Length: 472
Image (tube, rainbow, N blue to C red):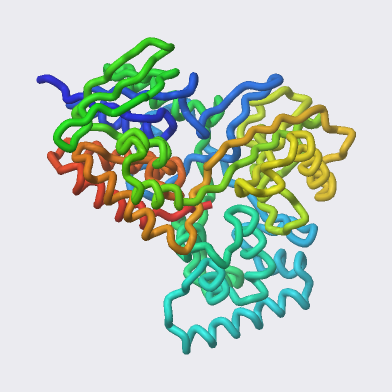
């Protein structure tokens, strides 16, 4: 039986997951095209100064039925299982997460703790009267947790990660916050209600050779099943006929190439895909896609002359006095990923295009991060042996108040291409994790092989991703 040709744009985790599940059906010849010289995207790993480093904190965990089993089957003994250790740094205290009553009260002090309780009581009483849907992230969080809790934790952390919470869509809160409201948090604080796998991961899996071994395993399996993963691939244009893409034209290692296809799956940024599809000839599409907002990502790796610096895999920092929103210690995942006498702490944070952070030098950013680590008591300044700064443009989708309308317009325009499907965080403009990318790939493959029309698969997948939740 002749296998149908599928081309996938982008060899990040989203593109590779789709390629893996499609190749596994045995009905498709899969070609994955990647512009960079390496695969994995921001889920990849790299080597530096004796360390294997990830692009920030990644873990393998899922509550989506069957996905964790799929990953374990793929990776086998390349995975290690770890108990999750992460906390908040608040008021110079490490606060347990999930939250515990005594620990939280000691960190905040009795006065602040009582203010949080009173704030929740006011929010609860107001909610009994006002049943209107929340109009923003700020309103959503304030109604559920009260103004004091919002001002203390949720507002500054959201501002650091996504920008002004007042013009964030409430969907940003529903995606990120597993608890249904302040009452659920209080019941968990008191021990009346227990955490579940849906709200808190007690353990997770991690590739022993670094997170990048996960996309590497996907690539190996695609190639074992007869597919191709081609790096240094420049896509110049999409050849189209009768409302479908028939071939992808471009260059590989500088040589002209053309890849015929019966289906095209894209995990590349929507503006890039739009230029390939419409050649800048659809102004309505351009306005909508350019209106979809992103946050740029910084990863500042600080190298320290100590075997280990933290007791946790990662810590969150909601307070504005710290430039970073999270720190992550690579060797907490596997001590073999770095020299025995040194460690690496990754400080990550985001910003907008016009921010002072984006204009700052790498040295300025590194010194800000080092100062924050010293101020928090995690390291001493004379222990620092060096730093590395990496920047990634347009990494986090930012849901502003009008994002749903703009996204709908973009989807409607692209769906005119009858054999096109989207996947991945950037490709679908959907805030999700690696397990969700695996689920998208499986969903696409299962529905294509069953004979579903790509347009129907697209609509069903967009509905599916709206139900994804981030489990920390």
